[in-house]
Length: 337
Image (tube, rainbow, N blue to C red; front, side):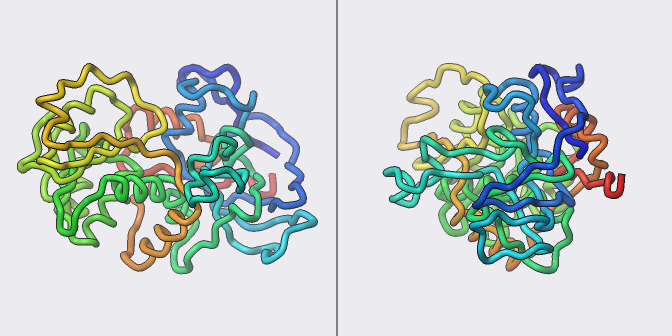
């Protein structure tokens, strides 16, 4: 099969992602073989490709927002059939018996594994997933529309909950890409006032079209103090900016897996009055189920830009350069080749 693989991690525009031939993977006893129909392009894929995240699997195939059809079943799999539509997300496997898993925090499992980092992901014609971590998908949405929900949507939802937004509260979103524009829709549906702080006129326009109360440059102050904020942009310089925008008792959640270094924080200006700074680490399967249910109920929809699978490198380069709003999705253009 044709697949993309990370060679020597480095700038994507210099060819660190290569189009190669790989064998069709053989599912383990507890796994599904999935024929990939669509795969969202996530900033984490860029971090894997460029080496911001350490190499876990040499030559790994990125991609963890996969919508596909079951093409094969491991010997121990029950409850799935060939042809079922499933989703494959970032969290691939946990040990299930550590203290974190037992208390419902499997996202903190020390032996957790991730799609497109520890195992080959969806920038390919086929991938595999443990059946226990495959997601049933809501009807009524096509493959392209669903793909970004499987990471951008799920992580944005967890970040929203981590930000402890009070009912009817004022939420600031720093950065407005694939994850933030889905998170904003959930927050708005639940009655929040949303202020977007981001570079890029296209992203600001999209924010206003979706119902944001304001859209300004990331380094500007929002028009009112914020009860909660989420930092989606992987820019450490924005941490003190967002903290200063919080009202007393406000919470800032940092949603990304990678963040550039933060400058020194000044206690009196940025943390006093019980402002809080929280990180977000992956997600649980319960997060995914709750978000996918709410997304169907609220009509959450991704603004998407499609690329053929054969142009995955271009899609990542365009993501890096902020050449599109919303989310990019790869569609399998290689069927029958």
